[in-house]
Length: 196
Image (cartoon, rainbow, N blue to C red):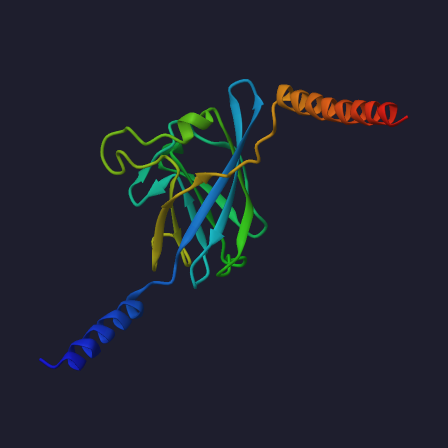
């Protein structure tokens, strides 16, 4: 076979892959805060990294299995979205028909409270059956209504937080700067007295 035919065949195969791509792709991050002893609030942000709209965000769920060990409470929805607790309290399904998340956009306001600690939420599902070993935050998105059309499955991750220096570190840095200023001032005084 001629080399250019191999090249053309490879090019056709590579371009053919994009013809079958669904265009749906997403990520999600969450923050947590303790609102009372043993009760935590989780705030999720959904990021549409694909090329199509997202109309369903099903948190802590894959087809056939929900992963949360405690049923969520006080669920909050972004404008135009509605929620449903599914799988006996193991997951939350958010859907919309009017406020789909456009490609390239992010949407926050997916909130819920839970007695699951941040460490428990960040762990892997240890139950039997579907999803065993998957992260508890594994989620599924659909372009439109649930269980219809292309989907994407991914794990939501804890949002990065800016590190706050410990008070001791701040005090040590302040003392260090103070000593530098004192040393510089003392040297100037010594230099002036030697010059006179």
